[in-house]
Length: 559
Image (cartoon, rainbow, N blue to C red):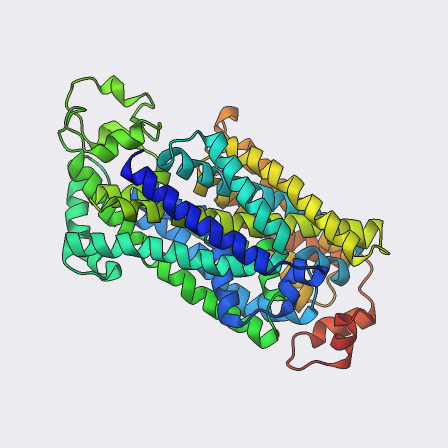
């Protein structure tokens, strides 16, 4: 066993033990604790849990790779702007009002605000979005285990499934929340230590956010030498319209993600829900302002290491990652095809998902730091996976079983169904992790598009337009989700339509689906039965401070 494998194993065992202990100490025996942690999580802790829940394997593993490799610097800003901008929408438009409405799940809000039919459509949409999203998380778990513990992807995913099963099934939302606070601490420390060390080594400035500005000119020059566009050049890979569409899809998708929205039900109050969003933005910004520097430092070193070299002279990190198939020739073949000839950076293809995981090795940092980064990647993937699995579990147990099939079910029965649903979801998630439909961030980006096209319009109209109808909401969700998913499938390379319509990428079509959802909901609402006067009054009252008698009656189940 190499030093890197040993340190990875040590950190994995320590952190997994902490997660399981926290879940055991936080185990719950009622549905309020299982679904929303009893609604008693302080704002700072809730903010950290939200950050961990949302900063998935895509953020930790893939974001720097997207910025540094596939989207070449400037264009990668769509992910930074979109994913963080969504929290501004959450804080201003949704979080406090959803918390005041006072339900367990996003479908619960849709069901009470609109109708039982709309609830079932929301359940379907939540499950689809969550499974697409969780596929990327489990794929990230498999990637880390494959590289750092020398086990195959299937074994790595099964290990991840087992850990999530213990702390998610046992502790529910309460256990998941406090586990995610610990996971955020692990992932942010693991991300910052190598970033600070490499920044100090390369630029002499230990603050990565400032240090990377010193190397942009050199990086632009090196890329020009290989015939590539400038790293900081605008619109070199994505047109302005597509940048707007992708950024909007990610932004509105963030504000419509079920596993993020449910977090605001765990806050102690409406005020705490708003502050939770602000704390989350702060915690997320720490990583998101560091990712561009990690991308720039790593790409600069990669280009230097792979300039006029040969397989006999490549650095150790190159062999390590090519051995697991994540570095290939530019044509997709094994690097052994390069033979004894001299090659450079443009002659090979490097998987986006290795940039952060390989950055300590590329920067020459010691094995313990490499192991810590691996533990951080696992924390990021598992924290988000657990939140998504809880959404699936609660949608099945609360919104289908309890609300539709057996309203007389006891607390114990509801918990049993919820835990069984989560166990089944974990099995499906494991399968998707072993057979993911794309690299980690690509899969996650599709989930954001689906969330934007299905949930965001229904939530906004449900809060701010009291005459939005049940038929309109159901029609809007079905149309937005169906059109967006059909487009995503239609543009898969195997069908020969990868250019899409007017060159709109699948990651940006969620914005179009969202606009279609808005239009369908508004039009259908004009010709269908309006909500009851009592519901219209409730919708108006949840937008104002204070707790009116009508809102109190609704929260206590009397309305």
